[in-house]
Image (cartoon, rainbow, N blue to C red; front, top):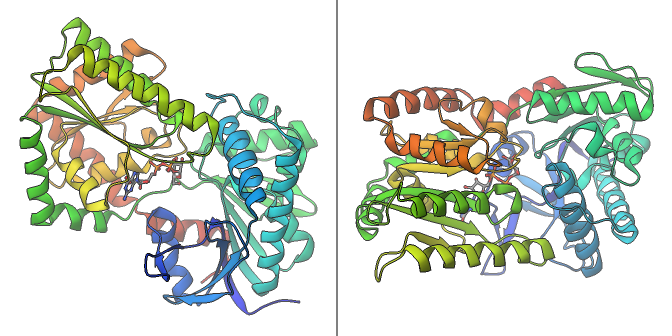
Length: 458
Ligand code: GDG
């Protein structure tokens, strides 16, 4: 049986968060910003989880979208979401920079929940509809959906890296995951290398014969290509031009004693290279290359996945290191690191981007990294420099930054020093080049290119 929607988005989370007044508010974040206008224009539906345990609320309308909640029990939140998604797949797909944990019950829950998402989608999609499935929590959904609904046009986009074959091979029941993804007509990745890893895997694991950008599977052609995600540049530029935001940026600099500002903004996640960044900064202070009188580091570490053990351990290590640096190099009223384990408003983040001298983005591995692009979009003054890890998807587009290898502390230090020493002319040349790239590749263009390649949604 099929429902009435010609376009359906499927993501772990719905496009809304519970509001204080008991209603719903649109969730922040790139995916919703990019896809909401399309869902609204096509009168489409969005299938996803509300974010809390318990039975799913009834489907409801929100700002031109039909939202279809999928319920997760408390056990499923533990096993499917925090377990298999965030303690198995997430670390494995990020080069195993943290040891992936494997449990059979987690895998079973992942399968059960993916089946529930597939069933919910099959029930709302019209005959011949276009379905766009997102990310690593739902990799079995395309295959499950294809079995039930061969009439659908199915796209899948992976927001995180797709690992090299030898790493993927560690995943128990790995062929099931691959077959799940191959249920899609189009599998999108952040980087061409990820698409290549995927196609190579189809040869090694299933004996398929991939071509440059596609592979035949089950009598269909599955296309695998890169679609680098981006941000809503206009929105960030508007915020950055707001006099209140600019006043906030000036105020922040005064509060910090007019020292040169190094800025980090990340979810507190072990993939983001926060510890490596702190180590490099401590060594620069210890060697006297930078001084607490002249430089300050502000690190926003947004709380994330705090029920997962690896994230609690990371928090302890980061906070110990911040304490150590401030203890060794601080003075009363003047700390070398300002550490904020808090979520800040978007306007505050933009004010910080505007106030920064050096944006420090040093992930050990990152699918794209939107913070790097937001910083560039915010710098309407064509000033500011960025130290950027080579291991982010963003590095391919933002190569006018100071690129570093975050695994190499000496290289990190070199990058920080070079960024601090850049002349005003050099800064402005680099920033203008990066701004031209970001302004040309907006999130709206990303969504359009993906859907054009998928065909069917118009
Ligand atoms: C995954 C992939 C890929 C952060 N702190 C606050 C806050 N943020 C916002 C940032 C940015 C977003 O969260 C983070 O996006 P990133 O891309 O940097 O990283 P992930 O969360 O790991 O995202 C990544 C992305 O998906 C999209 O495909 O780029 O590679 O890992 O927008 O600004 N926003 C607010 N307060 C905060 O404290 N308001």
